[in-house]
Length: 210
Image 1: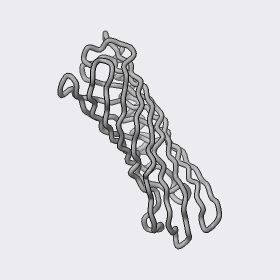
Image 2: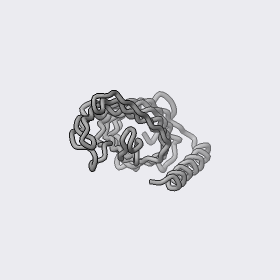
Image 3: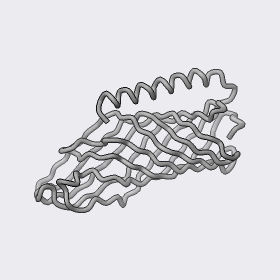
């Protein structure tokens, strides 16, 4: 995704969020949630044509977030949060030179989502938003220490499925896709795929649909 495409995607996201925020002002009920969860990073950053070796994703990441449900019948929700993706450890040869280290990824995110209520307790849908992604790499390359970092704001999207235990507690399974994360030749670059589970608690509002 080039700069023009990213700018257009972010503009559409912000316009949608603004429009829905205006609509939410007419709603009679709103609900507020706080939540946290865990996720697995299933992405490779090293260029396959230059790096031969292993990229492991053994560590587990985490996410914390806040959510607002304006009470719209369309099940629109707004979220903001922080995500620390599980680290990627690598060990191999980069253009024939010994290369081993760790890549860390974190993001600050805002998104707008839609959930369709299949039952009173189960809903599923998708979300789209903007994320400020920071990628940092620490490695030993050819026996010498090296570090690099890259930051950018990108559009991202995902799928969610939520089950409500009761009016207060719920659990969500999710998948998020972040395109072109990192920077080639420095931190490595790749499409980030994150799978996870989160729990949320409603601490305010009175949306009877939940």
